[in-house]
Image (cartoon, rainbow, N blue to C red; front, top):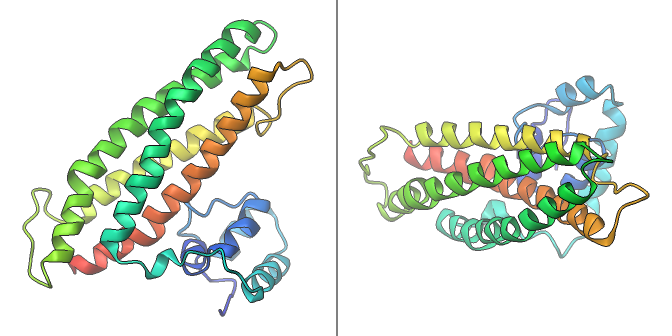
Amino acid sequence: MNITEQSIIGELVANNYRTAPVFKKHGIDFCCNGNRSIADACLKKQLDIEGVISELQQTTHQPSTTDPGFNTWPLDLLADYIEKKHHRYVTTRIKEITPFLHKVSRVHGDRHPELKEVEKLFNESAGELTAHMQKEELVLFPYIRKMLAGSGRHVPAPFGTVQNPIEMMKQEHDNEGERFRRIAALTNNYTPPADACNTYKVTFALLKEFEEDLHLHIHLENNILFPKAIQLEQ
């Protein structure tokens, strides 16, 4: 894989998910802001561009049996996977995290007032993500499947072009990315304080896992599913 300063981050991760940990290590967002070049992202973070590229090249040269090759999957299979893996995960985890976070905020909120803001942000995210996933499952994903089954024929869409709902979904992804950046900052990147009880620690671990899954979830849509759906329509 040829990696240069002008390589687009999202496309790199789409072609080889082994590059994702390098971007995570340097705090570079490859899902919501994956349409930037390596140079742009490194300049913003004041990182050594050549050093980051070297790390990426080393990673891509390592043998791997864990990369599922999402970029090669048919669109209907990828949409099914996102629904069954990531949408179900979000629904299940919201039900688990919400009561934990409420309990921790109620018990520890006086000593750690940031918990009340974290709870507020997570509750907002839970509501927005639930509505977001319904729009994908009831409107966008079925239309993508219809296009795929159309064998090149034009498939009428109530929203004009598939780019319209896709832009809406991407904007909502950006909103969630920003919300979780605020949660990560408030929790010192999910680091429980010295006086944290076990529930406190478990809650932070679940929040961290939730954000990591959300990053992959958004990456699969923004960098693989959506661009290919637009290409299919055209």
